[in-house]
Amino acid sequence: MSSLHKSRIAEFQDVLGEPKIVLQKLRELCFSGIPFDGGLRCLCWKILLNYLPVEKALWSTLLKKQRELYSQFLKEMIIQPGIAKANLGVSREDVTLEDHPLNPNPDSRWNTYFKDNEVLLQIDKDVRRLYPDMAFFQRPTDYPCLLILDPQNEFETLRKRVEQTTLKSQTVARNRSGVTNVSSPLKTSAPNSLSEYEVLPNGCEAHWEVVERILFIYAKLNPGIAYVQGMNEIVGPLYYTFATDPNSDWKEHAEADTFFCFTNLMAEIRDNFIKSLDDSQCGITYKMEKVYSTLKEKDVELYLKLQEQNIKPQFFAFRWLTLLLSQEFLLPDVIRIWDSLFADDNRFDFLLLVCCAMLTLIRDQLLEGDFTLNMRLLQDYPISDVRLILKKAKELQDSK
View (tube, rainbow, N blue to C red):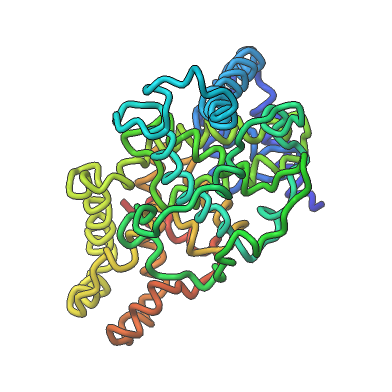
């Protein structure tokens, strides 16, 4: 370990060692990248995403309360419906019309159960594709959810629900136009049937199953948005970071902590996933146009070239902005970009500058290329050095 790296770790430890953390100091440190050592990144992200307060004395009480709350969500939204489903048909004499699966009432619990299955199947399809070039999400977690996997429990788990549910393809096509219609070179195609995945023995669960549960609970608690394709790409890096924490006391609770950090992050970016808000000032169209207006201010020649070729920001910036660049780079590089994004006071203004930096760094190729060549460059971004991109984005920020 270099002396520079050691001194950076010491700086973080000093700031995090204070009884009341000075958030501005922490932001400044995190902006230049957070060391993984000692679980520093996991801890900093939890503070930057407003999960942990700056007063350290409050941490233990808050964490206990939040983790208990998450266990309650599991009981109410997965275990209890699973018990009801498992018990169906065991004793039929007491089944009322309200309890019957064929009850046509849209408010009946069974109607809700079947609608939930539609959402669950879409989530399942997407989480199995998470970073297929990495083995991590297919591996078993060291901390399977005992509430769910307790052999004494006989109820329908999410895994069983997926296996037993068959839906017509058109019922699970709820996605956001443009999020996944252009494949990334970093993502290889995933197997397309359940049987192609290694089945883990009873008592084990893969990391992707944990991510599935987080997204399902989120969808149940947020029916206005539920689940939209692409959310899996947001929760993936968060969960990976927390589930690889070198501190086992934190790592054990990666699922609950990821859920609350994801919920807080989604509170800031959820408008990107709501189609009806696309053209509002908080919607994705406005943000995409902002990338071009920033580019016009910083590099008018390049802006005019893209306009002349009728290359609209929707063709590439939709995915960049909606998914926080998680499909453009390898996971360690995405995590490094997120260090800076989460640390910036106006974190999503900085994201616009990162997108602008990505354009200016390939300006020579774009100025020389035709429409087809330029579209290929923008949809399969050629620069992999994220430090260079972040340095350029900071220069753009400082030149305002």
